[in-house]
Length: 174
Image (tube, rainbow, N blue to C red; front, side):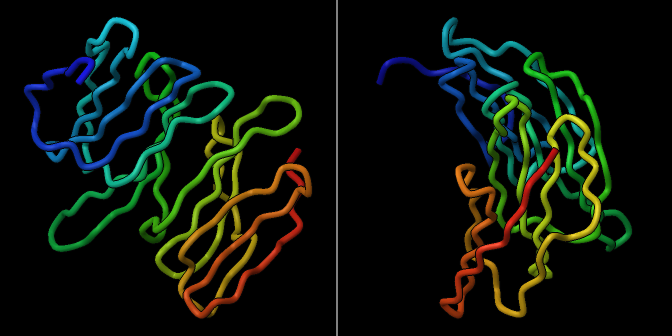
């Protein structure tokens, strides 16, 4: 073991590491995000959330942390996507209709970060990370979506479904 970072928080439920930004972001069971420095081996900032972080990723160009989180109130689940800067400050938070199953990121030729995700209804969405404007789905599958990626060289979303079908969806984002 090279080092450890004591959190003094509840269990880690999700995390991502960025070698580019020398950072580690963890989402904990007690509704917080821990922004950690891999250089100083310390916690930089803890953000208390009003929902439970389920999945997160750090974008490639700008180091945004995109978090899918869920809250439960009076037996009703509410789903959100939130974007945080490298310093842990909230940039945007939007409510979404369904839970997120898979999420990935890529950067375009101009260096802008994008996010691709599939929801529990097998709808696939893509958006520029900073603005977090989800919009309409770019694809809907009748089979369970099990993986996603974006082929930058071909400007194509690739969706793998449980039934073995692979869909190639041309998609250019400006």
